[in-house]
Image (cartoon, rainbow, N blue to C red; front, side, top):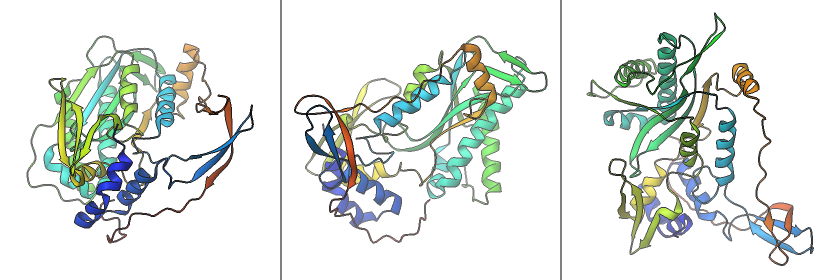
Amino acid sequence: MIRMAHIVETYAADLIAQYGLLPGQLAALNAFRNCRSSMSPKMQLVCDDCQAQGFLPHSCGHRSCPHCQAHESQRWIDQQMQRLIPGNYFMVTFTLPAQLRALVWHKQRVMYDLITRCAWETVNTFSRNDKKLRGATGAVTVLHTHNRRLDFHPHVHLLMPAAAFDQKKRRWRNKDGGYLFNHKALAKVFRARMLDGIRQAGLKQPGAYPAEWVVDCKAVGTGAKALVYLGRYLYRGVIQEKDILSCDKGRVTFRYQNGQSKQTETRTLSGVAFLRLILQHILPKGYRRARNFGFLHPNSKLVQLVQLVKRVVIAPPKPRPPIRCKCCGGAMKIIRTRIKTRINRLRTTVSERETVM
């Protein structure tokens, strides 16, 4: 398996020299490079059984690092699983046309928020107007910025139940069957909301864009498998290290699954181009990729009532797997953390202004 740290160590200097980096991208590179390495801070451990002591490097904790954050990803999935309600779930995917991608890239924080908000408002409006639902719904939204080839392709997934709550009549309604909303009608309303939002934000629209946008709406059963899919890319970046096949002679090859043929394909880029491809998916600092809306919001009293009806027992967060002693196999206890080591950070001449963020 090729580690991301090795690729960063090999090609980061050339990347910085050719293109320069934004502060957030530089911070990500430093995190990838030092994750669980000799340059990262150490933690001191002691075995409860044999009293043996040792040191282990910390993980970087960066949400886009493919080498760590597995526990956080699983914890998010477990939390969302507990909020699932009885009924059919649907995955609704809103995609921006290619003509708007440049605007999204240069105004990431504004546009990412606009995509997510317009997608939620669209499905909630359809839920209120639907003859069978006639009420407010709920959804889990996850923003993705990439396609399977890792190109810049911003879109948002909404996982929502075919259910709604009528606040006035205090009634809960479900919609049966494998049909939720018309995808073409969803696309029209989403398009209108996005263009209006761009105007209100004072941003310049592209000169041309298609009259028809793309929205996909498909049934996903209970929603459990869809949550696992969404959680896969929530914390661990856009590529797993096991999918990086080679790093040799200035080139990096990775594999991906073709969305149409379902066949595994490979893509080979220069090391610099590969790192640049990865870094374009680093989100602005503090921006939340996943959000909950409507009655699926953590503070919603309605979802708490549904869980009570289902007799759902909210399990406490699962602890991290214990670190085992190399001598006796017993569980080791952390007695000291963040023991500093000397770190040679990557440098860049780029201005500290967050021009993209």
